[in-house]
Amino acid sequence: MQEIAPQVFIERAFPGVTLGIINWPTGTILIDAPFRPDDIRTWRLSIQNLGGVTECLLISLDEHYDRTLGARQIECTVVGHEKLTHLLKDRPVNIKPQVVESGAEWELHNAPGNIRWSSPEITFTDHTEIHCEKHTLLLESRPGPTPAAIWVTIPTEKIIFLGDAVMPEAVPFIANADLLQWEETLKLLLKPEYRQYQFVSGRAGLVSTNEVKTQIKVLEKINKQVERLSSHPLRNEDVHKAALHILKDCQVPSAHEIHNLQRARFGLTQYLRRTSGALPEQPSVF
Image (cartoon, rainbow, N blue to C red; front, side, top):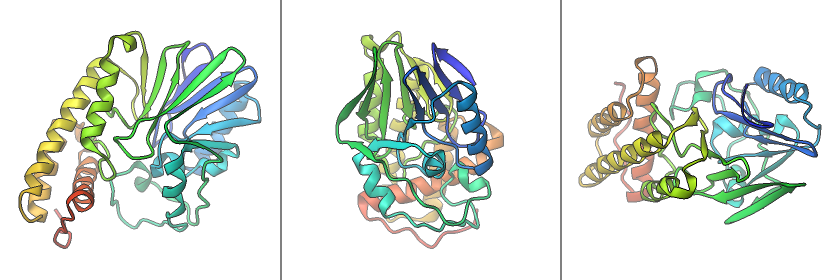
């Protein structure tokens, strides 16, 4: 666990997403949750060892399976965007993936059987604030990666938890994305007022302004691939070629290429189906 400011910690030891703890004297605020049962138990123990109070808030930065599978087992009040409620409502309660499909981290591990999804008890549309004595936490809707994506900002400590907005050396999840809106949202981080801020990626821990700029360029290149695929009937071979280009543009380490290539193929197919109604051929094995 890494302390990035007084009583503000991040944890990258578990598969899935970067976790956060804001351990204020009168209340503990958690950012996202692990998805494996053993990791959840370890995480709860870590919270107790920090002196965290038993009553706490859990903020879900979006609806992604990696960060919402274990939310109920944390056993605290969940906070999220109002669209998170609708997205979880339509989600199946039984998930047993036989093969990797979307390129998400949870698909590489033994998934639990029946899931009781933890819909947020506290929701908001545009923004809201959480006050704890002299401390203030800002929660803001930042759609782009998904409609339910939010950022969590601690103004006094100059920290922003970005969720999946920035994913260095990895193919971003685009299945439910709005690429143009995502690019415009990230450009906010390049403004002078954020120059002294620490940015916490939901997948990679602390990231720099240069990595934000790189992410914008990656999204621009992905959008060009989408435009090319949209110009003619969608074929599996074309999706595969476009996915290979994305994999190269994202500079994914060789050990993670296969998983990220599947993520790119799945993301492209779902994005095109949702935005243009394109129906791909039956999936092929590459």
